[in-house]
Length: 484
Image 1: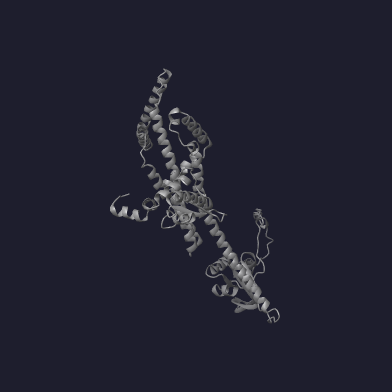
Image 2 (image 1 turned 90 degrees about the vertical axis):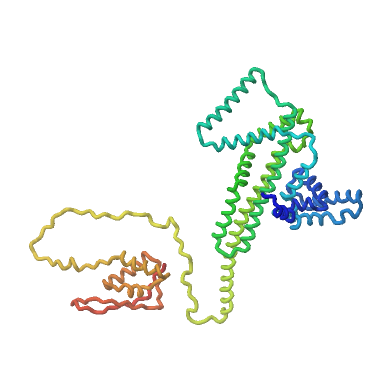
């Protein structure tokens, strides 16, 4: 980030940490929040408990500095600190509870952490940090090396160093860290452990910002459900797949390993029992810092879970609205039926195409049965010498059922329903009554169809009589409707 004049001026006016440091009550706010949140590593405190603790502090300050020092009540101060113009606390409600809770914002934790660095330190270790930097550079260089020979050379060098150290230990030459080096490294461990807890608040806030954006978008969304879900899930993937998200996931996987937790606890107990570390009088909470990491990580995980919950609730709400629309339609029908109950209209005033849904269960479908193959016997016919009329072989009429089915499908591509009369007008009958009967067979076997007994259609085609004279023929039948 560039620290030019405009950037710093913007931060001075809008950043909560800067506003806190510039507040006339900065000492009260920072000291109280540090004692209640940072020192005991509390993630959330209920409004009643936090107001009571602040009221005790205010009472003690008024006793010492006078009644006019802090004239407002503790709850007024807390609500002021959680306001948008301050942003030092986050006020929220837990799920299933109507009691407000408070939590530090990442900006406030940064400000408190920076204030903690202002005091002079009796011991400033530099060696451990330099070694840490050196180790980080070595990991980066080794992890990005693509040349196998160079990678093998680096591993060989490390193995030689380990072998040399093993040999020296076997000979009795065992180098030990002096007390200064131990204190240096322990101070750095405590600093990084505390900073890590603060980083969890920032990661959680980023996920919370995403959650808030999802709520706002769901409330104002007017488009399709699929588009909204795709949009939201893409943003969620961006956060999770970001450097911050992947680093958090790797850290969480590492911390959730019971083997790693046991190893970490054993190492921590050994370090805290060293005399050089005991002289530093370390905070008792350092012994359980990995449990604090777990608790902070669970807060972040719950925020991610709430994001998924918002999506599920949105889908449930959409289904509920659809059900409510159907119920409104049914109630409207019931109301109209009650109105005409005493004076029913004559004739067929209402018709229902289908009184029930057609359900076809999978097990009701017939199994496939292969067709029978005719067995041809190679027999030579024996003629009796008489004359045979071959015209009977050519008088058979064969209707191409598949061709007629294609006519129906093509007609249904442009409309949801088509009548048999319309089909015959579009594709006139070429084989007369046989073709018409085939259409009726298709309506019964292959297509969804219905018969309207109230309407009669007249199908006309051109055919020949027994004498071979061409005549117009027609058939009258109830309207047959093919449906998509």
